[in-house]
Length: 318
Image (cartoon, rainbow, N blue to C red; front, side, top):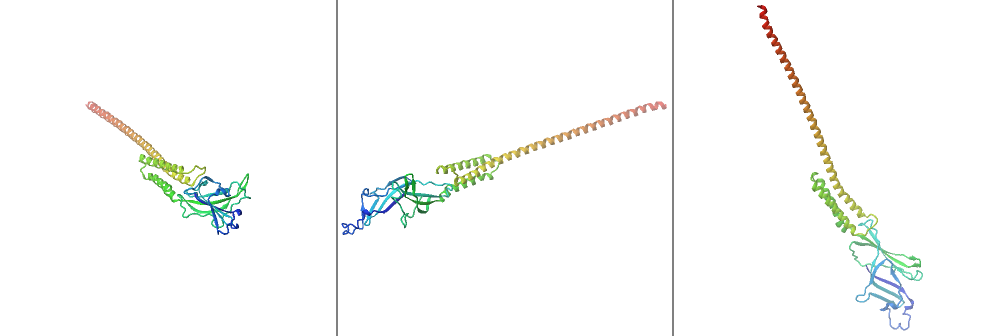
C-alpha cells in the first residue's frame, strides 16, 4: 500500500517569528531540503514486512517549519504490511487489517504520539481493490510495553469485506452444476453400467480438482473454513450419486438372482409334479392292463370250461 505519512510537532527552538532578523521579511514558513540536520521522531511500523521511499523525480519528502516553531514532516512511502486473517467464514468473511506506528527508542514519557482531532485518516476515493471493499476504518492507541519500557503507539484499523460475486461465479455455481450433473445418473437405465459409472467417476474427479484449486489459492490453516463445508457437502452429494448406482446395481443383481433361484425352484417343482403325475399315470395304466389281463384270463377259462361241458354232455345223454 502507498501512503503519505504526516507528522506535526512543535520545537520552540525553531520559532523564528520572535527573532529580530526575520521580522522584516514577513516569512510565515520555511521549507527545508536537508532534513538530516533536523530532529525527527523515530517512528516505525510495527507490522511492516517491506517498504521503500519514493524518489522519482525528486525525493517525496516535505519538511516545513512555521514561524511559531511548528514542524510539518510529510513523506510518501510504500509498505507491505502483515495482516493476519481469520478465514473461518471464507469467502463470506471480513478482515481487520491494522497499521501500527510506534516509537522505536523514545519512551512514552519522552515522546507521545496523538491523533489529529479532525480527519486523522484520509483515504482517496474511490478505493479499488481486486477482491475486497473497504467497509469502514477507525483509529486507536496501542501503547507498546516491552522489557525496556512503554512506547507510544498509534493504530489504524481497516475493515475489509470480501467481494462475493467473484466466488459465486468461480466456485459456487460450478459446484452446483457438478452436483446436478451427477444426479443425471438417476434418470439413466440401471442396466447402462458404462454410462452411469463414467458419469459418476468424472463428476467425482472434477469435484476433487475443484477443491484442490480452491485450497491452492489459500494458506493452509488448522481449522475448517466455510468453503470447506460447502465443497465437502457437494463432494458428499457427488459421491452419494455414485454410491447410489453401486447399491442399485447390487440390489438389482440380487433381485435378479433371487428371481432366477425362485424360477428354478418352481421349474424343479413343476418337473417333480409332472414326473409324479406320469408315474401315477403309468401305475394306473399298468394296473388297468393287469386288470384287463385278469379279466381276459377269466373269460378264457370260462370259455374253455363251457366248451368242455358241451363236449361231455352229449356223451352222457347218448
